[in-house]
Image 1 (cartoon, protein in one colour):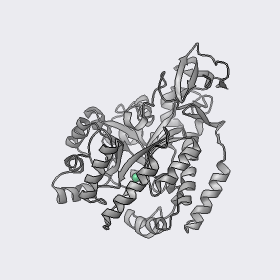
Image 2 (cartoon, rainbow, N blue to C red):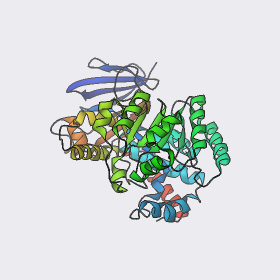
Image 3 (tube, protein in one colour):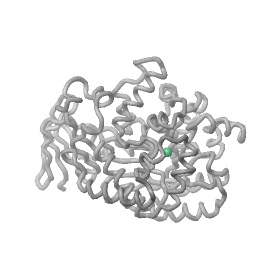
Image 4 (cartoon, rainbow, N blue to C red):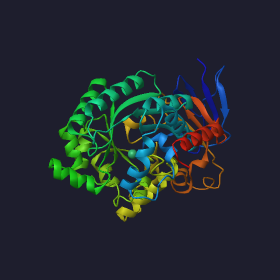
Length: 417
Ligand SMILES: [Zn+2]
């Protein structure tokens, strides 16, 4: 069976070839050469590394980039985002998500975890872009309407499930403060029944923790556990204020935490996700950008630097997070659920990988992992391959100009820009 072959790539200082067939790595090593019928890429000495996994975002919010970004959170939501979102059409979400996909491919992500309205439109955008994503429409019943929210979620899930290997469906209750206990319990049952993931914002602000303790008598992770929501299918975005007891509980239950350091800094949440304690407790951890409305970049390599810096700074210990370990967090290697087996280029792993500009100013000298974390941004990515398909070559994502133009048109329709 023919596939895609890469020759002349460099891994750990050694020249290697790689073949992928049927979307997975079929062979990798010094002696691997193309077989008849293979599409072949000559890497010309470029380093080959696993692609990245963006563990938490709201892809179509590229439409709201820079819109009211200097307002405090609640004013930003009430005065800017929610009124604009009330006018959203599927085509807005589609082009916003296409723009997000183009940015993520350019910066080396192969897959992402998304929470946004009209999730079927995001799924179409992901398929057309050639990426992979686990997608959920946000559940939100702070203003009532629980029955309608459930009906909409059933509709969304029907449109997301059984679309093929590129798209995973998820239940995505927005947060413990925007979703009733009844709806959280329902989401828990649905996720188990359908055997799909569960994606929620948790412990993002100190206020959320205080309110949770006041209302439910326990901190956020214990509250989720009480609702049977803290199992292996749970992805918890943020986790800034998790304490050690909560981290032990999350580790014991097998849930995953996704840290979003740049969004946390921009929204001034006032704390830092306790990564060293999470790692030591055995928690699976991934890295996310969050949406372009609150980051505003989807360049995970840039956020990787922020992640490493903030952890070193907060702990007062420059040895707390080695560069190679930080890179593993960004490639999903430390969170099996997020990456679906990605994160290492071994036979049978998803054929999601990058060829890097090894002779660029940022990567030309010194240790590759250190260069990627501290010197590089997404601009060092030359080639992005997802499921054995070349989505970018030479740093150019095909169709980018049209995608930017169409997304800008949709943003103007919503009254932005
Ligand atoms: Zn978010």
